[in-house]
Amino acid sequence: MKESFLDRHRLPLKLKPIFVGQLSIVDALGKSAYAYDDGSFELVLSPNEGITPEFIRTYARERSSEIYVHEEDYQELNQKLGEKLVKLTRSLSIGDPVKNATRHTHLLSLQMANLYENPFDDQLLSSQFQSGQNLSNLLLSNKGVHRHLYQSVSKQGHHYTVAQPLLSSILLLSFIQSTGLFSHKETQGLFMTSYFKDIGMSFIPREKFELAHLSEFDKRIFSDHSENSMKILNGRVPLAGHQLELIKNHHYLNYKIQALASNEKYEPGDNLITGLESALLSALDILVAMTSERPYRKATSVFQSLELLKKVLADEHPQEFKSLVVFLKHFFSK
Ligand SMILES: [Fe+2]
Image (tube, rainbow, N blue to C red; front, side, top):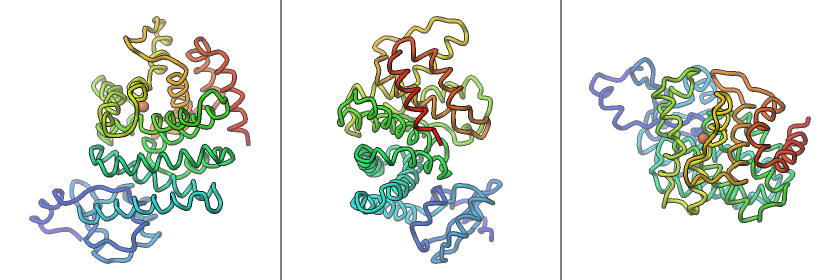
């Protein structure tokens, strides 16, 4: 059913995109919801029409991962999601921790997708930060959960920009905890730093994430995301100055790899932190990216990724690289 000419032209002002999976937390919407198709909005859900899992599955399969809802419904969906996360957090320690953590990460990823759409929403950011911290507490006190959770998050089907920081942070926390080199507080801080490091991606137009080849201009927008993440977070979340610096430089090993590929000497910029924390954060981000499939390329094996990482990590941190190899062998064993 198409809207009238006037309604159709007014509509974009009132609509906001939301991950269709988020509709699973409500029974119905107060207003209509729309698919954006071929330049116009098409009504797909009427006010108070029951939302079934079948509707969500079919829509996601045949239309898009996003559905457009009215501002009022958008606010309510986000509020409900935040409430669910808080409620779930309270019961995280009761029952099966893998099941709890899986449900928690799914909701957390839905909220992260919303945050990418609205990075300057303070309430959304602080809810996401609090829920991320709760997850890190659960992970720190349940070592047995890490592997299973990593696998279930990989299968949740969230967009890779949302899944990538979560997966790399789970792996980082798990590895750091296994080394015993960092305190509980430092490990939690690194998890949070890693989890929020890609929030600057919210400035990149969505369609660019599917492209295999980027123009020079696009490459620049992508490479700016680390600095933008830092700017978005600065003063709004309880991350310390050195953690924001880690975020700003979280791709430094990528630059080292690029320099190596073109036979240039890598020169870190002024004030660049290239300590162990920075190296591990960057290394695990690369490893997770390489071992995950993208719309424009296949995944590589853990072994191949380690071959590459060896060249840029083992020179400065040989002992930690060895520990990482042993850790990953166990983590990804069947
Ligand atoms: Fe990044």
